[in-house]
Length: 224
Image (tube, rainbow, N blue to C red; front, side, top):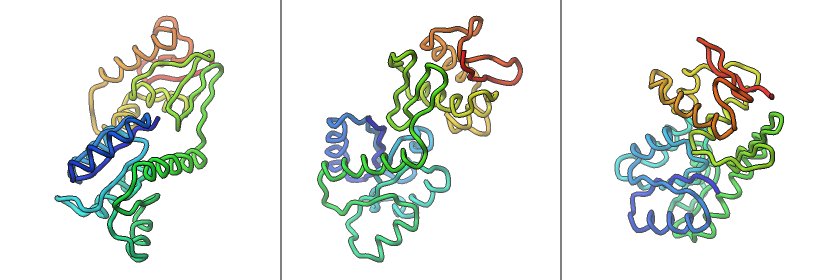
């Protein structure tokens, strides 16, 4: 399963594609305009974006450049433009793949699997700290070979801490990396998610196993 965000102004296409991808097991969200899409992509941190070029408020190619300025999320462009010049321009602007309209849901789903596979190969998919194992691309975490039922933000928070295992991560960094709020935001949000994450790891702040509080500084993930 992947978290897919569709930016498409045609309501029928948006509904049909979202339904097909959901049937394939993906978690799908969508936007009808470029600026709404940009906002949701930044705040929601999807695994892959499907981007239509013919948007009402901004050309999709311009939105692609804006996304690339803030995120490395794989982007599949959906376009009716099938000439080589347009294709080269899109790939140079940061697209990872493209589909020519009209396209089948099967074609799109195969391309989603392909770009996610490439992204996994480039970044590495597994983080391991003792008996805690995280499949980053597959968005699955296991502790002692048991799957953890994590919310999207809890998973992203755990990935951030595991990527920096042994290092203290400040709540400001957590807000910036997980909630995309580099200039503020409520640390209470972080506290609530940390508390829930600790419970799911079978520990507490007073009796830590993996997540250790460094008072006045932040949180450090260590092997027990």
